[in-house]
Length: 333
Image 1 (cartoon, helix red, strand yellow):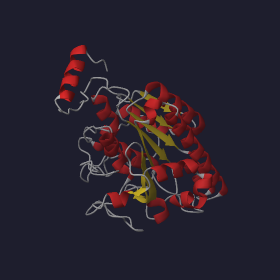
Image 2 (tube, rainbow, N blue to C red; image 1 turned 120 degrees about the horizontal axis):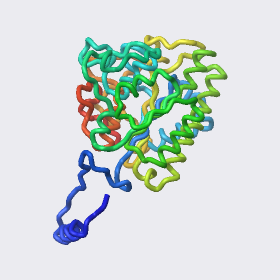
Image 3 (tube, rainbow, N blue to C red; image 1 turned 90 degrees about the horizontal axis):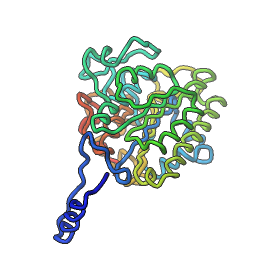
């Protein structure tokens, strides 16, 4: 942002008079790189809370770094209706429930690659997302995904400035380079390896545990990219969650099983209360114990809260038509 000589003189005058003022980001105008906040959202497909707890900080130093340095819960919930990848990720980026006939659902009920579909067609009406909200401010976003079905998002929201499909290892390298080079407002990274090995060998199998450990190292690669940049280091929030867990020995993930609908939700970054429980910071949300609450009454923290939380951290208004965290009340301080 270029500051004119007149603006500088006025700022000094205001300071001498004891007047405080705020710099407002104007939609369509690029923001100052040194002061603008950014969000990196990471979804680990099939990440089991049991795996986090049993593998511990020795095996998962980066996930534990985020939890210890930020606010988190291991008792967040996936979408009530379904417990699979595409419907839950659509809820994350739209902050809507799934079922289209029920108060504002996004309608993405399938979990395969359907190149002829968009979210808007599924819902039967326009559906905004965190990507389209970011675009309205003149800032940019990116999506890095390890499954081709995420092409749905690229078709539905052309406002995504960069869309990359790749295997987890190369995907993370490309995302890390993009974080540093472009300093986008919002970057979403989907890592699919644990889900793959859970389906192939079973939840908590040796192959599944090894994939979670590798995924933690890949998260570390993204964190090192943030650490390497003085701009990113002081301005970037990380939100870590999952679309579902994985019951030990099972090769599927029914929505009715605690180990499958129980997921982590972690927020890390400048000003976030270190080591805090998200439920203690947010008494209006109800810790669900081992239950799977529907959408009536006091709500648990859900992965679908992600979209509106990201916009709140960026200083932007909620997604139009959203129903999850639509008041942006989820507090991280």
